[in-house]
Amino acid sequence: MADVPAPSFAALGLSQTLIRALKMLSITTPTPIQAATIPAILEGRDVIGGAQTGSGKTLAFALPILHTLMKEMAGGYAVILTPTRELGVQLHEQFLAVGQGSRMGLRCALVLGGMDMTRQANELAEQRPHIIVATPGRLMDLLSSGAAQEWGLERCKYVVLDEADRLLSPTFAPALAYLFSVLPPARMRQTLLFTATLTPEIELLTQKKPEAGKLPPLLRKIEMEYVHCDLPSTTTPATLTQQYVLVPSHMREPYLVHLLHDPPCWSDKPPTAHAALTDVYRPRGRPPAPMKSAASSETPRIPFTIIFAARCKTVELLSRMLTELGFPNASLHSLLPQSKRLAHLQLFRARRVPILVSTDVGSRGLDVPDVELVVNWDVPAAWEDYVHRVGRTARKGQRGWAVSFVTEHDVRLVQTIEDKIQHTLEELEMPEAQVLERLSQVSAAKRVASMALHDEKVGEAKERNKRKAQAAEGARVPRQRRRDT
Image 1 (spheres, rainbow, N blue to C red):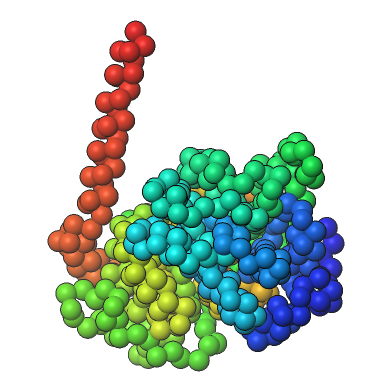
Image 2 (cartoon, rainbow, N blue to C red):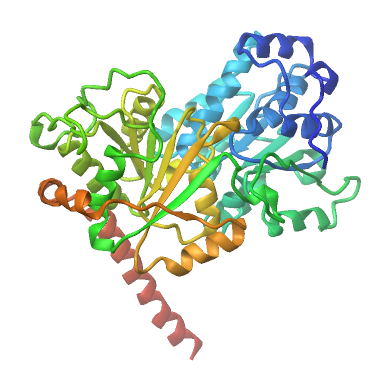
């Protein structure tokens, strides 16, 4: 579809009340994905929308939902499903921002794991929210509990799958199957799918035979300024510089520290008063060592950076090691309580810490402006995850950098990524002598962080539960075989 935005939100058919609310948020012109999808949603069509991260997909479905909700303020009017808690919080905030600006009396509930389930059930039963933003598992738990007798979704008119490619993976299949079994049938609601990685499997949904009285889903994908590729909706922006560092897996730590001291992009943002790290981990209560650049005695200005690692324990180890070395940072992973996850993310969003160390829980949909550098500590096994990770930077036409540490185990993964995005990563050369100068200091900091993790038994409960689940599964298989014989 041609990338031709509408001249105004009024031309898309939105009410003046919503347009005034958008102006209060300094939003005056629709983005291409909004121009391409809002009229079709207002017409009652099911829509599949694909566009780059940071392209305004949330408002593309939020605005038409709020427009029609004004005519019928019904409880449970729309269900917005999201794969991560952090993205759920962000969606909830955006709905409230527009709803409060329009003074429509919007009630929006947040239904996520890691929060008080009884309190969530009471909120749904007593307040009857118009919009429910939820992770599939927790919403399934609430609907299948006794609370479902007091509230329901029989009047639901919209179901939205945000980050649809992730939600349609096997991980969420049982919860989605249950939810769609209790939601109104497809002929009585609109189903909207939005994603930054518009995979062939999702596009095939447009060929599925619709129910009687409905048209097939309308596919809208937006080609912005992408690197050349036959699948523009699944690749990376042209303003993103993508590099790699070829390094042995056991030597990544000093290379990471050198990268943060001497990054390929120097921040042109004004210095930020970093947090005192009172609610971010500080090893053994000691103040962090002052950061010094190898080339200068001055404290370096760190680019606004996200470091991605595959495992929760790796994220926590890196975060504590960097803290020991004097780099203000926050961590984000599933072993943290939900309150800390939100607090750490807010520290990063508010620029009180310049570094966020995260698992892939922070790679999808989060709108954190002005991220300058993304570092892949681990090359992701799925190329789609690479696209989402590096999509945290180079947003809305800004420059961005992504650096991946490629170890002896990652060569094929990188080749697959390059093949899928049709772009060759450039090698970022680092002065080995300067890197090795930091080896002793970095190794000492890593030992301190490792001992702290060991003393606190971080991740051990999760590992025990995993082993128990595997043992239980293994025990069920022989019993099943005996019954079969």
